[in-house]
Length: 194
Image 1 (cartoon, helix red, strand yellow):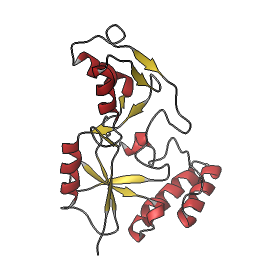
Image 2 (cartoon, helix red, strand yellow):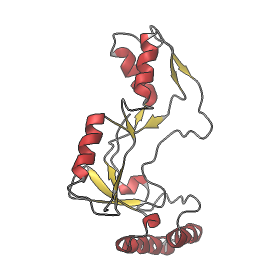
Image 3 (cartoon, one colour):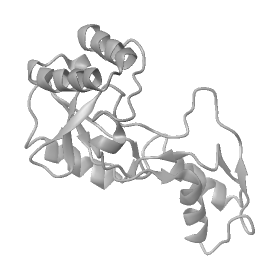
Image 4 (cartoon, helix red, strand yellow):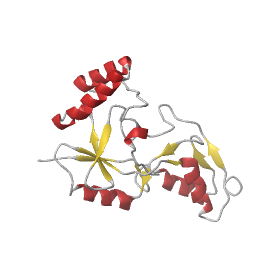
């Protein structure tokens, strides 16, 4: 059987989505609980998610991984305030907003790609193909070699060693390379909100 996979962030209204929780809290008069004022996540609607998954059928190839366009991340604090205002109420006046603190292991931001991953466009404007050393595809070898060459030219010996190990045996530790094409800025990954 030929298989491929798609990857995306949070889907509003799905199991575990924060939106139904906020709606219940607002209906009960609050408070609306948020872990941290600056937490942000990528979000899309169920309709967008289903449409893009179906669209991937037209461009997908076996053993490939695709990433759906999530737009820009949004702050959960802004989302909560928008939901409160959408009911004609005022945040922190009619409905209190309470910060509970990050849970162990919870991150402030969300990444759609691992540090050693990148992406390339597909024929569909909202779908990108994920390039990952972990997938071990021969066609991605050129991307990995270019990345290693760039680190060598820039004298990033520690990062080069980690990336080389990851390319050979798969990721064992995070690789932080702020000015490599695998970073969110240079990959120009368009993301969206929850």
